Image (cartoon, rainbow, N blue to C red; front, side, top):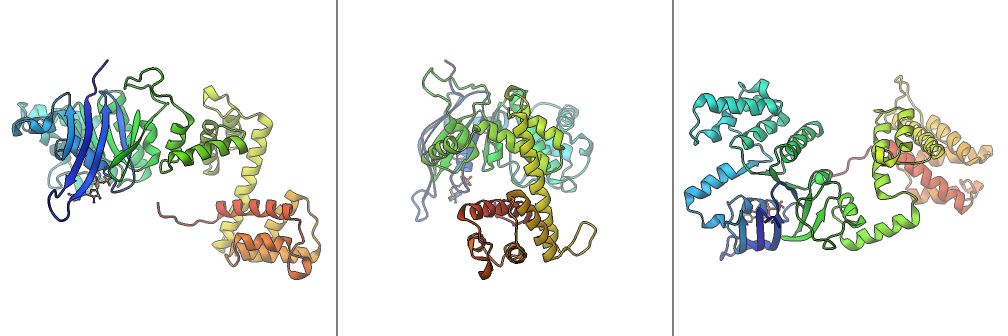
Amino acid sequence: MAKPLIVCRDLSIIYNQGKANEFKALQGVNTDIFEGEYIILFGPSGCGKSTLMYSIQGSLPPGEGTLLVKGDDVYSYPPADRVYFQRYVMGIIFQQFNLIPSLTVLDNVALPMIFCNADKATRNRRAQSLLDRFGVGHVSHKITPMLSGGQQQRVSVARSMVNDPKILLADEPTGNLDSVSTQQVMDKIDEINTFDRRTVIMVSHNAAHLNYAHRVYYLKDGRVVREVVNPQRKQIKPVREGETIVTELEQLARLYPYDNVETLRVKSLVNYLTQDYTFDQIVRMEHAIALFIQGKIDRDAFVKSLVAPFERGGVEVDEKEARRMATISERMMNRADDIRRFRSKKNNDGVFFSQHKLAERMKEFLTGEYRIKLSKEQANNMTEMIADRVTGVTMEAELNQRLMKGVRSGGLGLSERESDDMTRYFEKVIAQGIDVSYKS
Ligand code: ADP
């Protein structure tokens, strides 16, 4: 059986040991990382991800336990050997890029080669070919502050590869990047793993990245609390038959990375009790709906992607159901647009979009949808309660109560069931139509 490339056994790392501010950043960590694997160290800020990575990199000696790379204790190396290890066995990418601002892009990338025997022309050739490969060859003559964040990070990816390391370490490499640059950098790192077959260890707290990895180590308060295998990647770590089975919980752990195993079990059961679709189907459906509501695919393409067989990337929903989903989504988006226009006090053509008009349109829609015929008084009451909810004067529970209240007291006199249905629907539209900023 292949031996792991990196082994941590009962590893503890203690900062400021023996001092008043002593802090155990890692406790009893065990990991086995195999050559060619893509590993993500995942967890909330301060859980010890970077500490583990820098310990593997040879910069933080274990307080307790052992750390072996290719069977060697790198901390027992003489200084020159440790430097060699850090320079030629490991490449590293940082969140803040760590490029030298006074040097050109080309010199930044060629710099780590300065200690090897190659002459300047050879060093520059290698640096330029890596810059070309990572899509930043055309800016090689510029100094790094002239580049965008995404370009700078691709330059540091090139720099990390210049000495052809076996292992690439990446410390939150997309933490400072916009979504387009994030994608480009993630794709390049993925290519280094899948095409160059380098071992990648990435520190991240972005759940969207988990799918890239073969395995994810979840850390919390300095401990590895869970190890999750990605069923979408062929595993490198040898797994004895029956030792590890990939269950729905692993999939759920990737969707809800901060939940514990009990909560994931609950989610699995709730899904079974309440939904006809599996989590795999739901993930695909989410993707299709995201494209549809962003206007990136039209109705026909949306329906097709829902109907297509699962093995061809579809959701495998029957056609009638897919059309129904498209209709509901479309209508909801239109009503959400009304809410947006109302809240920005403008129509598409810049004309004032009044409270009355919004409520009228919502009302027509809701009464059409639920086939309820409203008296004039009920209609007026409904206009008012919709406007109140959309402007934030009332909360969801109050809207629900008002829908049930008698007409004389400003309500609609609906049954509890009708009122619950209508409230639920209306809250969905509001969720689509009102932009609230959430802290991530
Ligand atoms: P993460 O990468 O998960 O955000 P870190 O590994 O950087 O976490 O830090 C883990 C814990 O160790 C944090 O509580 C942090 O404050 C502490 N820590 C990190 N570096 C040092 C240091 N040089 N001295 C003392 N404490 C540190």
